[in-house]
Length: 239
Image 1 (cartoon, rainbow, N blue to C red):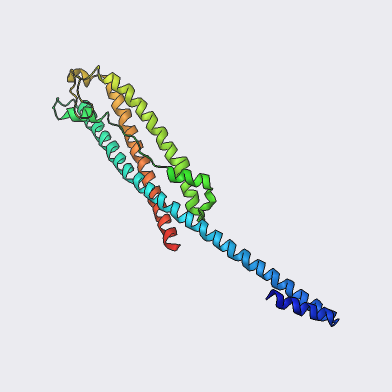
Image 2 (image 1 turned 60 degrees about the vertical axis):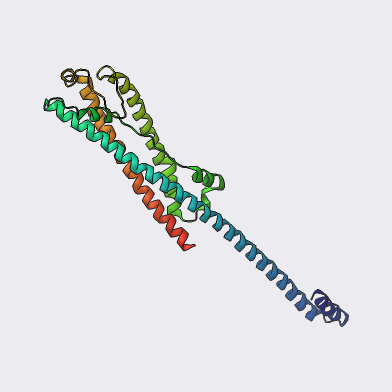
């Protein structure tokens, strides 16, 4: 093909047909430009397809991580609400001066219960390395940033505060309860003195609010995960 065009060009020059040669040369340049543009378009298309493949792969990994977070969050909610109920039951006994019953031993121990959020963030760290713009959907990209950089961080701050309070309270519990299994049941040394203990009553009131607050924040996290999973599923199906 190249030899064919070269022969035409040589013939036009030999026959001194300059205007036709100029027209031909212009056409040849246009063809070259069109060829370059086609090549660039194909290259850009291939690159975009490659990036889209990376995005979908990462979104699938994020989906698995978020499902894992969701399962752990549901467990955390149940544990915090259970501890809050135990605090409320003990407070009711104190306020109403109800007599001791060994069924309270579970609630004495359970009121001390706290949790650790088992969070998975490997796929999001990969996204930060590759660049957040890899996620084309603006709403999804923004919500991912809010979830991982803002809300999860806040939940861990709450958790650290809760664990500090737990460790501090656990030491004080030895003054009020017989040595026992804090994860199962503990028995008060003297129930009548316990219900009159202002520190213990204040601690129960504070812990009740703290457990309810943590449960509420975990519920908010769960709502955000459900929205993220919906957006991710839509992106995967669309592509």
